[in-house]
Amino acid sequence: MEITSPSFGQRIIQGRWIGKIALVLVSLLTIWWVGNKAAQSPSLFYQQIVNGLQLGFVYALIALGYTMVYGIVKLINFAHGDVFMVGAFVSYYAVSKFSLHVWPSTIFPNISPIISVVLGTITVAILSMVICALLAIVIERIAYKPLRNAPRISALITAIGVSFFLEYFGALDFVFTPNFITYKRPFQISIWYLKDGFHKLESGTAAPDGSIIFSNILIIIILASLLLVLGLNFIVMRTKIGKAMRASSYDKPTARLMGINVDGVISITFAIGAALAGAAGILYATAYPQVFFWMGITPGLKAFIAAVLGGIGSIPGAFVGALIMGQAEVLSAGYISTPMRDAIAFAILILVLLVKPTGLYGEPEREKA
Amino acid sequence: MLLEVKDLNVYYGAIHALQGINFHLNEGEVVTLIGANGAGKSTTLNTISGLLRARSGNIVYKDKDISLTPAEEIVRMGISQSPEGRKIFATLTVMENLEMGGYLKTKEEINSGLMRVFRSFPRLKERQNQLGGTLSGGEQQMLAMGRALMSQPSVLLLDEPSMGLSPILVEEIFNIIQEINSQGTSILLVEQNAQMALSVAHRGYVIETGSITLEGKSSDLLHNPDVIKSYLGGH
Ligand SMILES: Nc1ncnc2c1ncn2[C@@H]1O[C@H](COP(=O)(O)OP(=O)(O)OP(=O)(O)O)[C@@H](O)[C@H]1O
Ligand SMILES: [Mg+2]
Image (tube, rainbow over all chains, first blue to last red; front, top):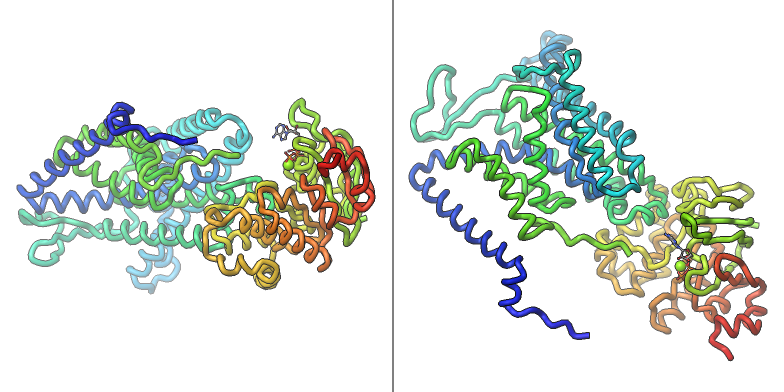
């Protein structure tokens, strides 16, 4: 049978095109608006880009967990943002209560302080990641696994329930308390500015006009995120377990026919995603040094939008989507108004869902035969 | 007896798909299960592989009851399946698909498995870096069989390997089935192409709406009037 393609006029009426035209208009307007502002004050613009990178890389770590879990069990794990919160709290306790970040110099008093802080901070990060991974494995076993064959909406509602549970369990006085808590960084922040070369900003002084300020935290966030993302990519593309993850996400019964323990693979996927969220938790709290029981909600939602924007299920998509979200948030906060940034994030979500529901890198959903 | 199915009953909800079937496979044999659409052939293979659970009855393999054994353990014990419709992992390369077939094997076993598979299916070697989803139907069938061989099974379950293939390719696939068998793998072959299946199998069973209605040596079944009428397109 011949399938005639609809005429141009019909396509416009059919809707997608209206969305696409709207998107092009919105994009042009945005570029014009941002370009205008950038021309007025280039250094402010570059400053925003730098701040957006810091945020975007943290979002990327969270978004990867959403996308990996979705890829394998088709579940939007709304508790993921709260796992991120737990990661931040674990590092808070490790640093503030147990001084884990300086363990090398406690044990070996002669060790150089820099090596001590580096090793100590890595230890704290690993602890957060491991605890988040274990937490996610437990959550998956208790809350999601029994619903594996239930309608998707049941698992989704359960995920929202788990999210509330983690938040309000965390809010208990003997857990994380309902308070905003100042976060003690495992290492000293040092601030630099770029104007006619790099200069260290001494505390108590202001950077000169027209300079771009950044901190060692930005560098650490970018390096740590890149390292983790490359590591993840290696695991997924090159290792046996990564291949089993891809096979299982494509077709679970057939994966079992290969001898793959699919339940185990799902656990590992949750664990890896949660470990990345744990790393994001410590990085985020280091950059914005405050922890509280619902701190995971907003970054979690932003990262979720990033994953949808990139095409949920796609790892490169989550990464690119998160970088875009970071920029969108910072530019709207900087050039429009701070309260608008969340509205704009959701406006992006709505536009993506209208115009390309499968996101930048997404493939149309494959129907099971 | 290498594999024996005893009084197996399998349900999909209220649907009684297998109604007490019995059959067996001896070491070194090719046994075929023929039957019309919906007779219960794939259900039988998937129950043996552990993807489905029988409500009653036993599956005995090498003197052990495996009717409650998890699917991955069954592969480890030496039963692997090339499923109906090939079920290639489209987003994995040919090589990765084969590696998944050898998931429970060591690196050395995977390498020797690859050599064996590439000897039977030279085409796969040429295409090893191509995505599984981009192979032609015939190549996908070869990949599905090669993948199932990677676990070096004692029993190979083949579900409709000739489905959708051109006559020349069907011929080739059946030659390979015989070759695999002659190297010592016992084969349970599910087919709608009864003519071909009976020509390579030692024995056969006819399954109709969940029950075995006929069994015997292939040569006898080929001349059985009921089989000729229903499955060989005879008059
Ligand atoms: N997932 C399922 N849910 C419900 N009923 C099923 C399911 N799978 C198979 N059945 C039913 O069980 C019976 C046997 O199906 P099965 O797939 O084993 O047949 P088959 O002999 O392999 O057929 P074909 O030659 O078409 O592949 C059929 O009536 C089918 O409708
Ligand atoms: Mg079938």
